[in-house]
Image (cartoon, rainbow, N blue to C red; front, side, top):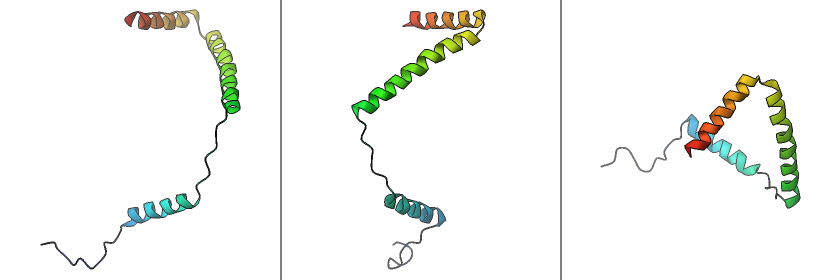
Length: 82
């Protein structure tokens, strides 16, 4: 036999109440999804290319020749492992 009365509803604790309140707030304030267009994708790709071109060169300029050699050796070893 189950303990207690079935007529009495279960009480929620503080954590359960907080989750319920946050879910209610989030449901009321949902923002509509933004549709990503081809133009937006092209712009993002262009920005990525610009940053990539700058980043690699700057990184290489800031490294010592010994460090560049270590990285190159590690990359070659990884390629030969495949």
